Image (cartoon, rainbow, N blue to C red; front, side, top):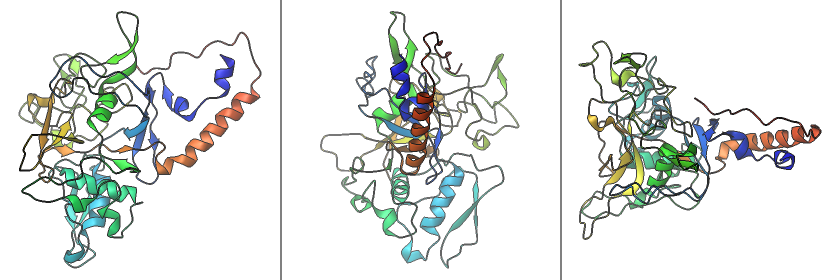
Length: 368
């Protein structure tokens, strides 16, 4: 046991009994968590599209939060505050976010600013293709060069408006940031590597993304719903709760509701785009992209089940609350130096500590 403690890897340092510590990537500004437990079993509990899915055979990172207004404002200003002939194609402003328009820096351009208190409002109402362009921009270091938006994670020259579907289906090899696959999203939202099972086995799937087989309590943050504190921003509206507005609730307002890996607002916020496509034999029109997770509206769709409670739409069409949670490689580009320092410090610290036969095991540090 002492030998194992001397060679602590960075991924172990970042994981506390299955819940990942957020690692802020200085390039993208995104709080990432590491999704480990490589080779987890598929979900086999049923469902037309989700059954026998969810296994991921590599480590990856995914955002603790959905993409925020602050992050999307930076992106759209870089893409759209340009002369009209130089604007980046396929980039749209959200239907629901915490920003407003302002005077552009370039004639004919479009520019936005974050409203006070709007920094953590999720960017809801974006297209799949906008999300793909955003991934390209991150992949290329947020460069203002036009080419930085056009390729990297996804080649947008493959995007067309019909009548056949030509979009690049999955991310390019070597992509640093991308739209999560169905399997990656399912695992981050519903798999728990330390779940205790009735048969004594460890590790399993939760039906909901709040580490439970029971739906979260939906309502405004801080409000009691039938005697229980609200747990998610979905399936309620200002008609149910006058004076409250689900579209002004910031990400992170329900800190007690998270997946086993520490992802917040999977139930609530926006429905999150995935890479997965609907595959229809002989299709002649736009193939739809999946989205999963529950939106911030009054629909019963708020119950974000693993058993087929998902949606889909053509990649160039924004719905009221389609948003994005970014996935990234291991390690994300801006995190590498910090991980190396952390790993070196951990190794050196363990070597300075003399062996102790009576050393007690660490306390269980799982979050409640």
